[in-house]
Amino acid sequence: EQIAEMYKARWGIEVFFRWIKQNLNVPVLFGSTKNAVFNQLFAALMTYVVLRWLYDHSKSLIIACKSMPLIRFKELMQENQFQAEWLIAVTKILDKYVYFSRLDIPKVG
Image (cartoon, rainbow, N blue to C red; front, side, top):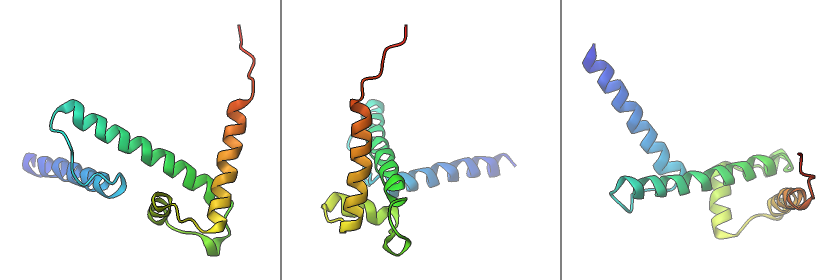
């Protein structure tokens, strides 16, 4: 039973690292220290979260036939080769949030 639990825990770790390699585009770790690994994974995770957020918000402005999977979205973003519909949607989302970030919000207190 203990061996089965240990194998199950190890398998979970393997699945997690496979997800990191596939989704965060981290095929190799550049450093071997704890801090180097942490920084590389943290930067990759932040990038993934921002791209996922942008993808999810932009997707709501796209008609179903022009939809694409997240992986394709990331590739086109990296290559700067969006279709016109996606470019317009991404621009609208970014413009909306840049506008909100420039509003003067009164300080409380």
